[in-house]
Length: 317
Image 1 (cartoon, one colour):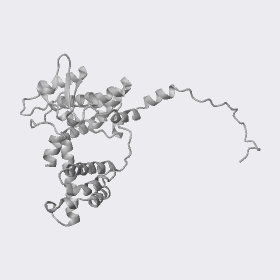
Image 2 (cartoon, rainbow, N blue to C red):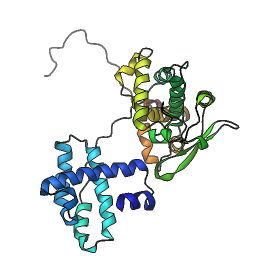
Image 3 (cartoon, rainbow, N blue to C red):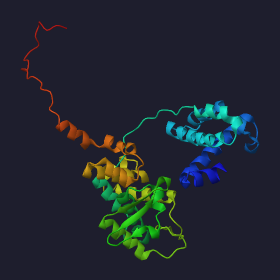
Image 4 (spheres, rainbow, N blue to C red):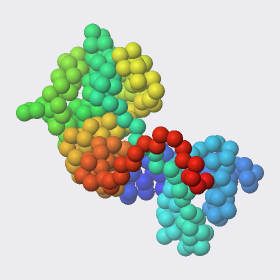
């Protein structure tokens, strides 16, 4: 009921969130059944207590080598379930409160990884426009980068979400069922029109299709991106030193937009962030912002001293 009713209908969680929570419980129940030496179906709610959850989190980090960020995501799934239980099983109130008191682990916040103008251009030019797959891949890369889309937003883009008059505008369904409308560049419109001109009629509504006429999956796009990164490295060797994931295209869009507008609010709206706090990571990663701050401040003076010609014998040590 929690996964099938609570998340998708009451909380309107995305399919990705539901899948992530389901996998967290799969791991938790497998761990608990091993601890108690019973089958997962024989586990009782009372057995999912704070000590077990703490042991489970330690198991994730030490035995599965999960990062603190992944550990916190699994804990968030457990806590969400406990909030669900809190109002339905009064006898478990103390158990729920103990689990809710488990703290998240602090994580490092690295600078976002993004591509330079020359690197992203090399990537966009990598697909072979003389092949069907190349025309599709070029359109996908253009739309992903120009829109700053999450990979789920890209593969979930539907034909009904496109509007070409008076210019290309796409309607994006983001996290939390939030929608936003994005006008894209003419170059992106040309790449997309080229794909739509050869796109066969399909039973699915998604814009981008695979060779079987089904919509491209998240893993499918990751494979396509990796393939074209290898081609782009020949033109831009610096790409070989970077890890280019689908989300890096989103980061690149955000960074280039921030450098062009110097307006974090516009970047936040474009990306569909719920708060400006989520967008501040791009300010931290943008060296131009720091250079402007340095240039706006009068530096302290350093008195000029004559260069000594020899070491003084009276110099204290």
